[in-house]
Length: 271
Image 1 (cartoon, rainbow, N blue to C red):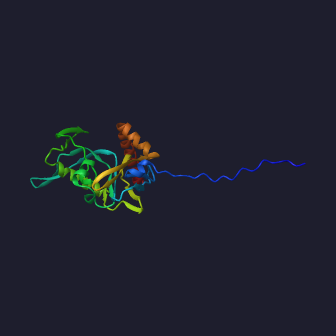
Image 2: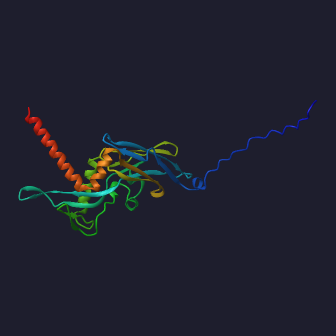
């Protein structure tokens, strides 16, 4: 007995896949970026970290573009003293306090910033250590902290620029501020990378990265990223205890020091 089978359907060709670029990619110049690590854990064995920032430049035009990377760490007060000579004796001046300066600041670019944009653009954006915004009040005043009177520096004061340069110089010496005019490298057409090096003394907290794209001296696009540097383990517990209960932490440190000194004296006395 034979069974009549229905005719086989005609072979169908595979559907044609059309890849369409977004309108923003085809019409606008823009930059996109990311970090290899968005979190850095700090423990007793922390010796610094190196993070790669990578991205792509979408540039449908023939005008060349430059990439500038700015990484800024959490702000914190900066207390400075200056050596002054008084009657032949060098003494410390009254402490000067900046209310807020970045704990970490790094710029990397495809070429020197002065070749990418003019002074006004860089100052308006706060790009570059020379244009770094360090918080200071409009008028100088004094505050008392832990029994010591500090002079809070004023941005209108005559010595503001000198103190500001001192902050930058000390941060650079500690490898917390860095400027690399060739730190952004194009590894392929439109693809770039930059390395963010955090020293062992890098402060904990939120870091903010800005990736600027410049064309003909003007910013045309920016990509914003965040990075978290956080203590972990026993170090974090001690840090939180010290900041939440400073008096208890101080008393405990004094007791531990006294007990250690007493134990050491007993050991050396028995010998």
